[in-house]
Length: 317
Ligand SMILES: C[S@@+](CC[C@H](N)C(=O)[O-])C[C@H]1O[C@@H](n2cnc3c(N)ncnc32)[C@H](O)[C@@H]1O
Image (tube, rainbow, N blue to C red; front, side, top):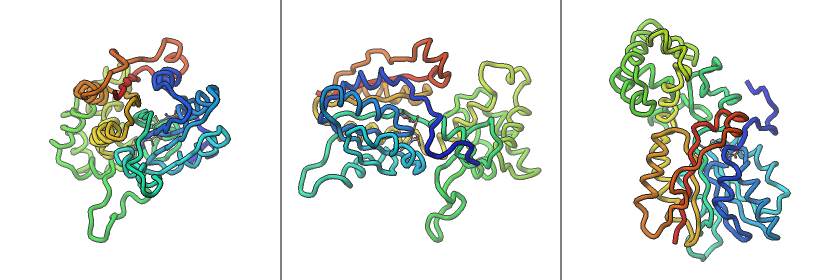
């Protein structure tokens, strides 16, 4: 399943300098990275503090335990104080509370970084069905045993396989439209329901085949792969990504120290809209990026994944 050693990452950090320059890292900062991933942003943050003759505290969160283990090696030896915690960034308050010295008031961060979505490592090697280019079980979750019930008698954790095999056609169409902005959502949902009546949909390639058969043949020759939007929608649903973002922004803002900055990189318009409106609605804030920063032509040519990235930064007064 894993094609690369666990100590190496194939992920290329997006908008690296734009993010860390925009956060204006200073020695002594508590830098909270809610999506630590391969640690590219965190590493540069530590180096920028070192160049200024000081160091920072890195509170690095990721829901993927494997990512934390790999990244620990990358960040050690940079002079930063490290707290790497397996946690959803929607619970970043709990993560800060867990490392707070006893008797002190709620710990705040001076810089917060959220680089949303998945890392290339997860698309390439997780074996969990995130990529339509690999034939893998249709899971799209990081939970260890996603088909087991979490608590005796409780509901099993959601997987993409469950959605496509058990949800109503209308609900499937709604998420593919709402979270994928897929214009053929109804046709794809119909195709899914017809296909599963013949045999259960188990793998990514089963689903890709259904999507291709449900959409016009010219769709396969468009700019993006015909499965892109459906896969995005399933992933967002399985991992409750929209609610996680909303909660993460609220809690991030609450736990941002006065004078602190928060940077968010999003990769699709649904997320970007949420970030934009959240920033607009804050009182006592300066939106540092009047327009979102995007990747340069050079970055896009070196790392095509960066083409849809939008970076927005806010400062708390
Ligand atoms: C795009 S990568 C981050 C890459 C990182 N900035 C770097 O430079 O290497 C996103 C990471 O966030 C993690 N992630 C996504 N959603 C998350 C969530 N709600 N809570 C915690 N981690 C999350 C993923 O597991 C992944 O490792």
